[in-house]
Image (cartoon, rainbow, N blue to C red; front, side, top):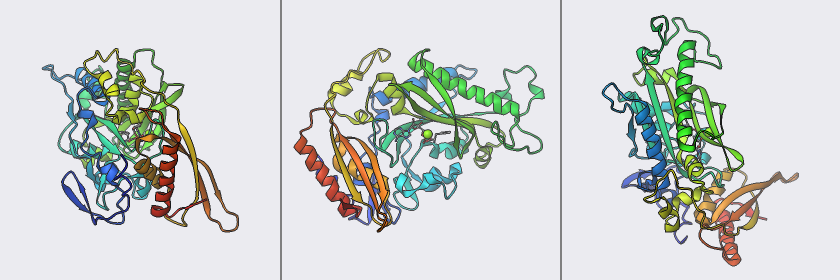
Length: 415
Ligand code: FA5
Ligand code: MG
């Protein structure tokens, strides 16, 4: 099954994604394996758990915001291509040029100009600019990230944006004419609000945002769910928060959100409104809802997985694990090359060669040789199949193939 997955070395000066051809350059980090996921659109496959959770959340927003004729205010965009410009993904949401999130090691760049989106926030600016004031965007997003049961290089996000005019935000206040969205002079930015916003606008937006998110969590998981808000930072919102939910003994981060930066709305032609935005991880929410223990299962084509979600009352479905096969654990140590090495390069390679058999990669040791100053890394790789018991010899072969490929492609030196 891994016969064509070791081709991480560029052989072709061009990259083709969904019929579009791009010139490779120094930025290119997409791999054939990652490109093969583009267009799968798990979130649009009926009865897939990601599609089920998308529809539940969408319906919550449809029902919660109706216009005077009783029609939903929100519209949903779940077919936007994940191929975006670097400008859309970063510049349009004010990610500074030197921000760590732009690192080659963290993203799937197609070339200097294009990339696979790293978040659905890449579409905020264009949709606000198109005149929308209440929308959801659902799609696959791509990140070179760590490997464990809740992180996967391709996952799905839902973005939500809601704008308010003065009239809309203060509709429920009886002294609305004494309230304003904007300060007349510019005040200082504080932890509570942006410089141009009034305190009443900022606090009311925060209340609206947290209310709709909390009601969503209660709808999905019931009133007894344990949630907490953590202060966060994003370049495109202030103030910002993350929501965590208690799941399997740990706090799991499920979404980021905040009050939209006013300069974003201004640059997109909506400067007279204010708004909030959020971006949630669909896998994380589906894992909680259906008790799915490992994020790799979303890509399973095994009928024992998919059939569980078919034609059922989804309020009843709890995933019945069809396997908890034993893991096989193997360590790998090597000297890193002098330059141009990042752990994410290795994680990517492990996924390419080891495929879905890799459950987790953890760096367990790192040291610098006192004389030669060379750096050594040691990684512990947990292999486990969702579908069968792995044979030790099989794992040893894959492990050796990972080592050989890393020596060849990353110029590491096995110890
Ligand atoms: C963002 O991506 C922001 N764009 C969210 C946002 C939108 C903030 C709008 C403010 C306004 P973050 O990197 O934290 O933030 O990712 C958001 C969510 O995606 C996380 O909370 C998590 O649920 C999910 N997520 C992140 N990385 C992974 C991964 N590797 N695998 C699965 N889910 C992930
Ligand atoms: Mg986060």
